[in-house]
Length: 219
Image (cartoon, rainbow, N blue to C red; front, side):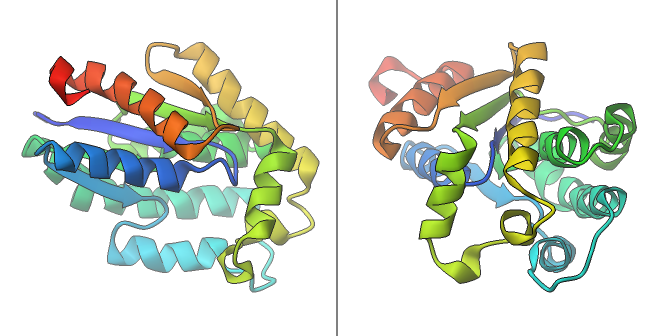
């Protein structure tokens, strides 16, 4: 599989600002004439968006953590085949708001599904496709959840409202992300997300500009 583009993912606990920073980076690169595809997980395809509603809606339906992992993987497989790989083949920069690392952090570290099983599932769903750079927006759990609670109530997901996903769960998720970043420091960039959005965006752009070998003038 010949891939000419660059795959960048954004990860982090709830309320860390991933979606905002992914959008800002995509806009900055597009303004420089870079072919950019901004997408998200779960979602990105018609099937993925349907699965997203099943996974995130606050409908009171109990999900086993294994079932969540399998649903995320199903949406991811479609996403990789229909969106990510075709864009990379034509040489685009693909920016994805969450990817396989989220399943390891949430269903693995957070909910206790064996990490090795999740890694095997992830490799199958993604055909082994790994990001070249993963941006981890790190933020204390109480600050992240407070940000989410201060937003529009309809925007909250069951991972932020169901009793089973308490503060201890979100602490495990955060520690899981940090552990993943520690194991693969060449791929991950850990960013302090408890700062103004424009400051964070500048730090991220410098990292990505270096990865893409953009000129000094572009920075």
